[in-house]
Image 1: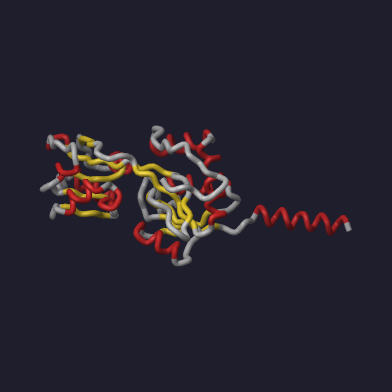
Image 2: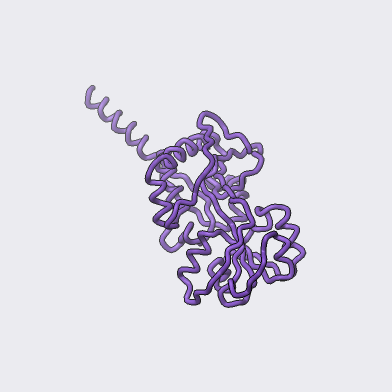
Length: 256
């Protein structure tokens, strides 16, 4: 009898330790946040640790950012990452923000451009990250949609190279992404960083509210751990991921 009890306990404990993996929908190659060739990067390591503390293993599914939300809503994947902080929607449950992007405008210092407002980008060759016109506010959207020399791209290494080669007057992208590609470029050039935008916070989305609550609890555990500071320093060489200190771990998140 005791032998059967021991076997039952082993099975129960094993089941708890081997919870089903979670399919996590993430974007495509975007160092230093996502590195496809090594399945690493700041965002992947952060998500992997949060999901590990939930008791699951993260299985990353790499798709274009524009498809992440639609795939979740169609029943593909358990977690949709990089969701803007907007009003909550029926049937989708959002985590607290887990990552911060600080988008900036970068120009070559020798060009001596004055860029203090999105309207100052008018008439200039501007290359922005994919989706910039949707997340950087109405003033930015209105300014760039009137600019025939404006384009958006998913290739941010090429984006930085075009600026450094003089093929673009300005680029719009996250500061950490720019720093990464500038440091790895064979064409260094003095640049000016124009800070026009507030930082952008992103959440994860779930179909299952229990997973959303579990994610928030695990995320809070990570943010309070020295591991989180060390992760930032290892990728960014500075602490620049300050997140709002608002967590609702006992129920669905409020929109804000």
